[in-house]
Image (cartoon, rainbow over all chains, first blue to last red; front, side):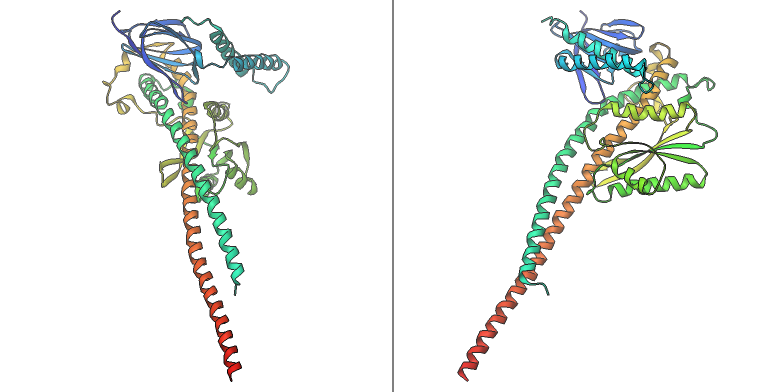
Length: 140
Length: 300
């Protein structure tokens, strides 16, 4: 391994991750992509999903990201997301409640005018991703 | 003249007021700390965002024809949305008044130009003021400024402005917020958020990085699509910043106001005590005179 790449995940509320990683895999809008040190610079939007990386010790870590975008430089990956949570910070009960709520809202959106189905859809996506990540078996 | 008892009661009352103002000062101080931390936490995001947006705008500015609508100023401005941020609570000195004066000035100016202004109030104080004056208030958001709020508040507010702009209801949107300059100075600030102006060019914003470094970035999807994705976020970011600044300013203003109030109470207590002591002494003297007078009379 040539070295580690710096990973930073920031949201408007806080800095979620700021550490070195061996490899980073992020959910780009055009498909998941992996980044190692020395990657070509590029810029992409992200979709709702999970960002995975291996930290210095080689432990796999999972972070939920709610879309946003990412800038990749040869020695650094920056992710700007509207919200992001490390797996251990996800409150699974809250996530499941959100999932239920989102499903319900989406169902109602078909009959009611005042609910923005696009937004309900987005909320559902986020809830699904959160629940999935929270439910994953801990690797270590 | 007030009797001794009256003065004593007054002193007790002022002391109680002082206790309250002191407590409010301390509450404001701790909330201020929280608000400042939030501002601090937002900074990395805002900086990175501005950097990326700036370098992107460098790349696509070339053709004006296909510029994203959020960047194109309208030739004729007929309707404007004004987002006014004030606090929900009072007792913070001239904080809200200053913001409202700023808004009034803007309204007057635009009325003279024959431009319609629709108000969106974030914060109870501004809403109450303009409601009393029968101003047209399009929507209101209470319970945000000064409290706990997340980025989604800014997203909702920003979306409202963007939607109105894109479907042609409005031609511009401005925000009035209180900029937190220092503990002693909070400046009401007016800034235009839609269409987006003043996206800093990467060369100006970037001193540390070599100029044009982003030119080598691969963009996925295209730079234009990325830009379209980012522009609404720029509006959210600006509104979020406004909210953070206004909240911080509110607490700072309240702290200063309560500090003043506490020391004014102190002064009042000092001067009242003086009056009280004088009155007491006068009463003692009068009593003595009476006794001496009585004794003299008996002797005689």
